[in-house]
Amino acid sequence: MSTRIAFLKGHGTENDFVIVPDPENAIDLPPAAVAALCDRRAGIGADGVLHVVRSAAHPDAKAMAAEAEWFMDYRNRDGSVAEMCGNGVRVFARYLQRAGHVDEGDLAVATRGGVKSVHIAKNGDITVGMGRAVFPEGDVTVSVGERSWPARNVNMGNPHAVAFVDDLAHAGDLYSPPPFSPASAYPDGVNVEFVVDRGPGHVAMRVHERGSGETRSCGTGACAVAVAAARRDGADPAASGTPATYTVDVPGGRLVITERPDGEIEMTGPAVIVAEGEIDAEWLRGAVG
Image (cartoon, rainbow, N blue to C red; front, side, top):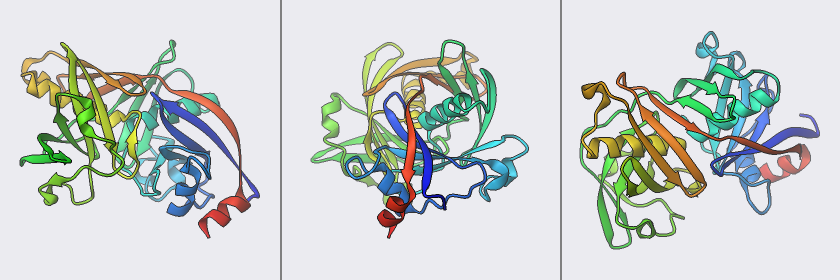
């Protein structure tokens, strides 16, 4: 391993990431290394790591290489592997553009949640095709302290529990995962969104991201919230033939989510690269050891 490893720092609606370019998948990033990089006091600080690898060079993405040249090997802040990260895909695409790998327009990004279609607009916004929402059967309840709410079970390639509340403060500090039941609904944990209404087609949310705690934004969570709000409001684009669009305010900004009649969900928002530099490999080895 080189004594220094290139990195960048970026965010999408303040959901922030350490970006590690590694086209040939030559850098070992065990969970302890990811956790060290994401540590906000002893490391660089982030909600997660975007490991940038060519699809053909990564065993988890080789099957997608014909569709997407680049694989987003995403890790949560605690080092655990995640299927998908919506804000992360936008930042990943912005990095590819900055590095000269892609231009404005359309591209495909491989993720553990499948190949995602991305569009980089001239105004800087990035739209990601997030796939279709799945609504697993069964009632779910989430709790904070003595309060409990029914939640909508939504899967966006990763699991979500969406609870509509009267006040976002009712979500508490969100440092720890909010308890849910039944336990069988989410055997691998869940992202929990707490949602309030701001107006017609306009909601606001807070989120506890599985493996990361409360984050300033969650792209897949915003999509889950939008489709849950649409169904609550009686909107089903597949049945009506009319797209449903919701503005979703997150602590770090604003995302626009559209569910099309074919079921595809599109998320539009900003993505910013704020810095680049080098990680000291000796420090990283010491942090792991």
